[in-house]
Image 1 (cartoon, helix red, strand yellow):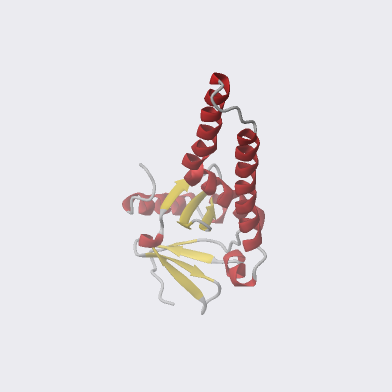
Image 2 (cartoon, helix red, strand yellow; image 1 turned 120 degrees about the horizontal axis):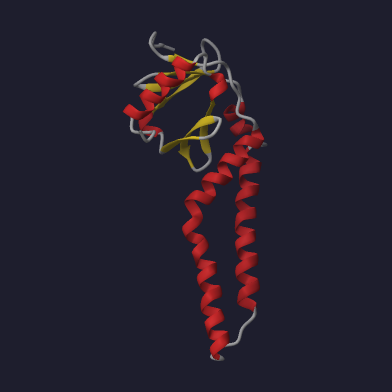
Length: 169
């Protein structure tokens, strides 16, 4: 795999499965927050109908709450299941990252790896202990600050992300 001598290189790092589930659920809640208004609206409409005596119904409260809980549990099970499936095992292997203006090179070893173009990154954010690059609903690149070799590498990485408009200035 061709490498750029000016690229930011990291130490090898594997995404822990518990961290993956946490990241996936956090992104899920962030993107699905608007759908939380549907059960809330149903409950409020039913409350108004109950108070006015037009249509007294208590089941909508139970149905909306249980439906919401089951929806969240469904996605929690999905994200937890991903960590157990063989086809997703490569997501949790140790990679060394080489990051430059063109791409993110994920190297499994000197001969194996994959390339992620910056255009594939949907959004990025800086967490308290890491950078998280979102590729899709269930795929993330989690780059803890500790895998960078120096403070200079972190600053160069941040500069690249700001140039690619992945991180707000």
